[in-house]
Amino acid sequence: MSGSPRPFLGSGIGLRTRHFDEIAERGARVDWFEALSENFMTPGGRPLAVLERVRRDFPIALHGVSLSIGGTDPLDVDYLRRVRALADRFDPAWLSDHLCWTGVDGRNLHDLLPLPWTEEALEHVVGRVVAAQERLGRRLVLENVSTYLAFEHSTLSEGEFLAAVADRADCDILLDVNNAYVSGVNHGFDPRSLIDALPPDRVVQIHLAGHSDLGTHLLDTHDHPVPEPVWELFRHALRRTGPVSSLVEWDGAIPPLARVEEEAARAKEVARAVLASEAEAGAPRQGKSGGRAASAA
Amino acid sequence: MGEPPRLRELQRRLADLIACAPPTEPGGVRALAAAAEGAAVIGDETLDAGERVAIYARMFFARIRDAIAEDYPALRAALGDARFDDLVRAYVAAHPPHDPSLRRAADALADFVADAHDLAPEPWAVEIARLERAMVAAFDAPDERPLTRPALAALEPARWPALEIRPARSLVLLACRFPVDEIRERLLAGEALARAEPRPVALRVWRQDLRVYLRRIDPLEETVLRAASRGATFGDLCERIIDGSAGAAASPASDAHSAAEGVLRLLDVWLDDELLLDTVSEPHPGG
Picture (cartoon, rainbow over the protein chains, first blue to last red):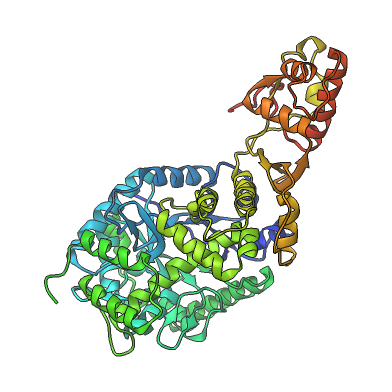
């Protein structure tokens, strides 16, 4: 699938119901918003009116949680039709969803469930990404998810799997550095290895969020500020990718808009500092390979 | 472990484990661990395979419970947290979610409550559930152009009898055995409601200016709105009042003039509430 280079949107935040009134009153001090597609799949009402209002002033991306690109039920063509209708109406910079499955036999578990990193699953996912992109008329952006279990027969790492999907299906990547950190701790691997396995030119967005430490494992709760190890992974990723649109997610114990804006401002400052430092060093970025140009040719 | 399952079989086994109630006892976790190994899940010294699956099982229930609680706050208040959780657990087992939107997970909850006397014995519980379901439906209803006074003022008098009176699709009419509007307010205010006396009320729920409203209505308004919902003209509604079919509690009007006045009084309120669709103006270009 052909596609023009992704725009650089700067530092954004997730659009949440709690902030609707405040955004309507005073706007927001961020560069862009990410809207959860499923929240706007209604015939009408306040969410759509708010998104119309936001879209007048800001770039947006649409972020889905129900594509189930790794699922084994047939692709939900009605869902894809609804996503496409939203995209046609709001002209997002891109459409993203998750590298996961969400249910089987028609039952929706409303979770981002892990795949085994096998050749069988890889072939399956690649075919579905190609089919979904054809239905959507756009290149997809796929995100790595937080996981709490792994499968004995995986033969690839998560990073290798996601990189192979992006290459074979010609899709892009949303790198969630919080998810990488949570999964790394939960499974005992270095999250930098996941980032390093991804083709930098395919990474068009980075997610930042907080999590909860339950002692035996980390839970991806999005209800805390971005913790320091996740900021450090953000820096690590930026050294490989160069300027990439970033976005702060805050979904639980959501604070006032100003607090989320602060977090987005910090993301902007961290990116500025990393990129200035890289420019000063004058070295080519570690991972830049021209992969996009090669795959798009 | 034997041959790992193919992807679809793996997903089926895992989905069954996640959708079952999360184990709360060590024996349950051990049983889950054995089953998880059948889905090729691996554990380690920190968390065994069963505990790892249990993380997803707990999140599955909590996510659906929280979504339903957000849309059904009075029902939750009526039952209390523990009984509400029991109700949701039984409901999800009977009606597993299918729609991509979590907000649709509770579509059948009110009907389920009607039959779940053991889980929700309060006689008003089902009417609270139906009221909160109506409020969700109104919130998500299609955007429509409301009928306005200027549009009506421009209508020639001769066209009034054939004027189509069509309610907005956000409108839901509820005939209740209990005063559930009052009960809901008391529950949301934190009042522990041991019992309530039956007292029939009619309610209308609708959306205006992107917000959902609830109002108690008299028998005349209820009957006329129900007739309008089935499809009626201004003339039809006047005749309904004249012949007394507007209900026993509504006084039949003696002539066409007073009947028209009766409908006009209702019309006045409905215009304030943007309750009617604009069936008068030319459609906007493009629909």
